[in-house]
Image (cartoon, rainbow, N blue to C red; front, top):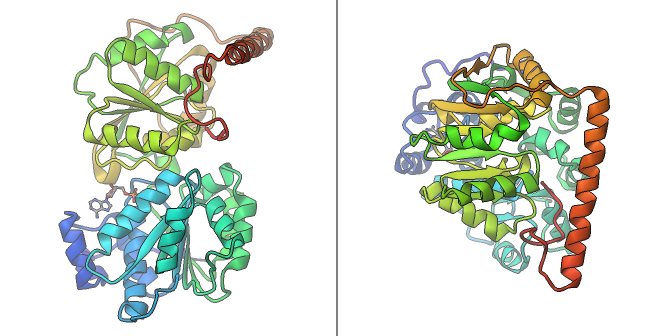
Length: 439
Ligand code: AMP
């Protein structure tokens, strides 16, 4: 595979990258002054019809890096055709939020072109999406499940695709989409240009990329282990039981007016948001048990500054795109170090400064060690901490007992809920629709 070694050189403007005037006008309107690193690398390569293997996280400007040249190439092929548009590009992405955001970006970048586009995702009725497809689009952004569903109903086909993008490939595999991806690949024409993006490149991802790409050029920005240099990372060591109080102590800092907080579980996210609301801190939780409408509403309020703390699980947070998000808090330390890097990558976007704060209980001390190994630096420990860690990690035996206790509590919770429901007492505290079990 060829490596892309050009750091962008003199390509200091979108114009110099070969972007067409109608798109330049839209970028100007969006106040994009100069291309980000990945845009400098990817745009000219895609315009020259290369397959690209991109190693880049969200927040690097990756969406525009593929969307701009795709719009341009299709505008050149089809822009002046009068007939019903054919689907020329498919962008496959793991989550609904991400799909919607990519489509919104395409909408902005293509404002002064003839490109038609739409987005399809599950969890909502298909009628509107089908109507839009009937009228014809050039670019389709999709999550795998709904795409295959509509294809099986013969409401769309992929025979005319010239450009295929697999976005966030590592997350796709984490979320168990491998079989869906394979099914989609079989439905695409043999001859096409493919772009493959992933934040991390473990072996299974490299293997998958080989089945998709033809003589790709690899581009890489901010490799995952470098944990975005612009992000200031801090760590509080504390006890499990004092996390709640420590969080309130941290949030006394009024500069922290827009905080994305990560929780490992859906119930945990709800609990944290509830606790904050009790002390009059505007907070909301988003996760897979919330309906699409609830999630979009919370995200909108957060973006507008009406919610100070948005608590999210990793998957729900995946697609969140907020300009200049300044603070990320890890309420729990993730046991997978790469998840930590994904999380803190939500701050310090596109070269801005960001702060990531992690709360570590004794059981998570070992995870910190792993993370520090991956990012190859020590996270600064905050000593001025009224709730310091005084307990030790559990022994194996204690852990076993604790897990038993947790299982018992869970059982009890569900038993109580069932009893409540039998009495007609509502949904026992779980928000949203029952069917969706995603985090
Ligand atoms: P992404 O990595 O695609 O999620 O983009 C991260 C954020 O950076 C989004 O809010 C984009 O609107 C913004 N962005 C992308 N490219 C540029 C650019 N060249 N100049 C300024 N902002 C940008």
